[in-house]
Length: 44
Image 1 (cartoon, rainbow, N blue to C red):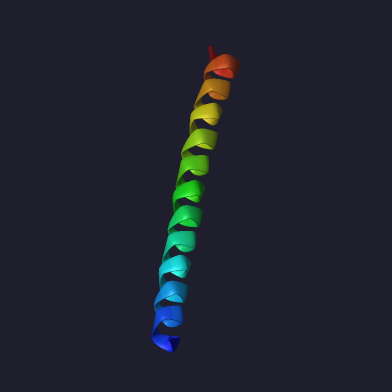
Image 2 (tube, rainbow, N blue to C red):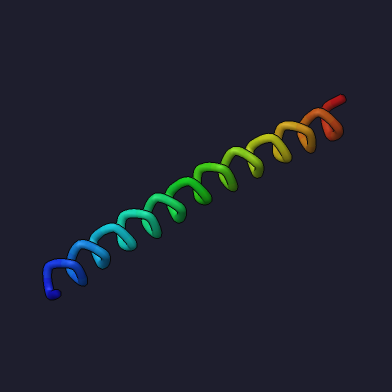
């Protein structure tokens, strides 16, 4: 019983951290693209 709970906790922790890391990278890239577009408008 305890082993199952422990495995579930590890799995959910890995999934949550993966989603957070993925979301952070995705957001950073999105902001980077917006920054490039803004620079093009300012300097273009």
